Amino acid sequence: MTSDVDVVVLGLGAGGEYAARKLAEAGLRVVGVERDLVGGECPFYGCTPSKLMIHAAHDGQGLGRAAARIREANHDWDDETHTGPLEEAGVRVVRGHGRLAGPGRVEVDGTTYDARLGVVLDTGTAPTVPPVDGLAATPYWTNREVMRQVETPESLVVLGGGPIGCELAQAFARFGTRVTLVEAEDRLLGPEEPEAAEVVTRLLRADGVDVRVGAELTRVEHDGAFVLEVGGVVLGAQHLLVAVGRTPNLADIGLETVGLSPDADHLDTDEWLRAGERLWAVGDITGQGAYTHVSLYQAEVAVRDLLGAGGPTADYRAVSRVTFTDPEVGAVGLTEAGAREAGLRVVVGHADIPRAARGWINEAEGIVKVVADADRGVLVGGTVVAPYGGEVVGLLSAAVHAAIPVETLRRMHYAYPTFHRAISAALADL
Image (cartoon, rainbow, N blue to C red; front, side, top):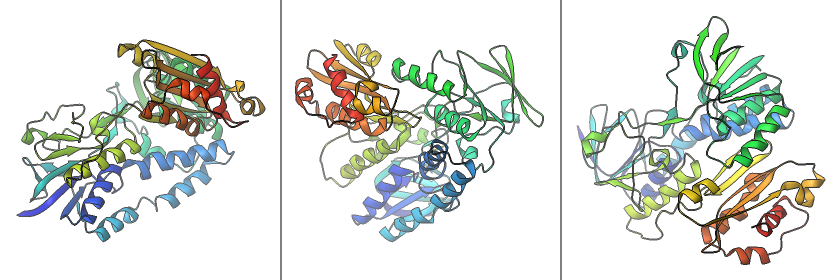
């Protein structure tokens, strides 16, 4: 059976959901295909539930309170609040595993949808599970299982020192769990500034987390409890959380039918998010950052292109990101290392958060680091480790995105007493 439509959106995560709704509201015949929960990872197993868990831990509440709020927020893992608005907008939601069947064509359970304008891909990612001896046969957790927990474990090993690993290690430690955090690289938060990693590592340890960096997991056994060989040392724990990253869902979506490799680790796109003939891609699969806000931003660009509306194209100079530890790590643009690798003449400025009166008043620990292109006199990156660091970094995000001259930033007035006032001290240090 073949069905003629205008657009097929394959994958209804944040960006796909947005694109499908906007295109339907513009009067196009839109089919949205999803094999899992409409809305994607973020509202059900990622952004929202993890922050509810983190909030409960940081606020002195128990895991039980977090679990109750998670179930309330995502309606007990029911996606009607996502599918309903799509269908009201005119999107035909099709449940099942979709595969490309040539340019502009998607096959789902025997029906081929032939899209006049094309296909938008937003197939997202799945938790990466490393090929560790014995791991596959054990009841390990990923982000999907951990968000359903209602009882606080006695002990937990967290494998992976990225944002998710650090956030949940701290949260469970504050719930009262004995936590060991294992990272194979020589520091936590590898893509971020080393100064940020130093602060987070120190404060995780102050929370009782046993942080082990440069430690590789080589074997896992489970017989009622976990036994793990890590860096030549045997560790025991009630549970194991695997948080070593995400793998794009590209292997079984028919990329070969449109001239693309199913073995790719991401899809290259142009400034309009075009990935091929009558094909657009948004979200994690584009390799521009596994962030909901990036997916939504890309979907806006792709929708304008599909509608012929024009407007600004995709620009990734000022991608912001936040690790929701306590204190938070907010960052935007390039790190110092990234700027040097890009061939820029780099200058950096530093300030400790207590340099701002609010930081001293709150007895807060943290840093601000700004990275500037000396030749152009503008910031190309910045990092804030502070209470509400994800909010404080907003000023730096605007500065990087708009290429505001450093001299203009220095002449601004910064409200007193605030955490963001430390940015002025870092700019003075450039």
